[in-house]
Amino acid sequence: MGADGAGKTTVSEAITDEIQYAGQRYEYWWCGWREFKSLPFRVLRLVIQRFRGGGDTGSTGTETNRSASSSGAVWKLLGLCYFPFVFIDHYLTTAPKAFRLSRRNFPVVYDRYYYGMVIGFSAFYSFSERTVRALLSLSVLYPSPDIVVYLDVDPETAYERKDDVPSPEYIARRREYYTAVTDRSGVVSIDATQSPSAVKAAVLEAVC
Image (cartoon, rainbow, N blue to C red):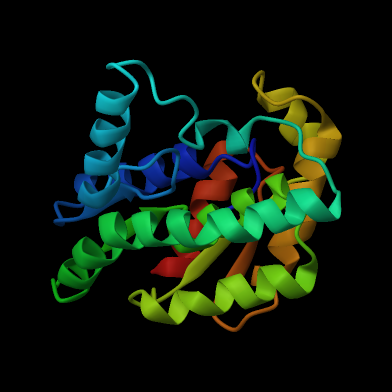
């Protein structure tokens, strides 16, 4: 996990390539959240479309990773009211498969997982650190990973790597939220300002 520009997907794919080269079975899974995908919400979307005459239902939450957020009390309250729906959808589309994979005897690389979803959502709605920690506590409902790797990169470097983020401040805000995760036991922090090969080597050393 890590803020935009940290190289999460790049490193995850490099790790799985290394595992595959060694001839081992593995599973790579991007399991963040961008829109409602579980069956109950897909049905609800169809019902809304039917009542609206087949038109687009509008935003499904995909903008939460890219739009600038407000910090007002009403905005935060809106986020707290919205989060249960996002959580339910993410749980229904992630937890069952994660529990099945946890019983398999091969490595699974989760790209983002529950932590990434919570951090992105919390930063968008400008939640307090106390709220972030409370939301992160719900991770006990998911299978616990053997190790959590946090790719840490300064906002300026991350901003140079990404062309789809509004500003370094956007990344800095998410980096602050990740501190609520990195001080938990079982989290390994890796300096992601290094070269991709150095980061991959550091991650492999941590997980192997």
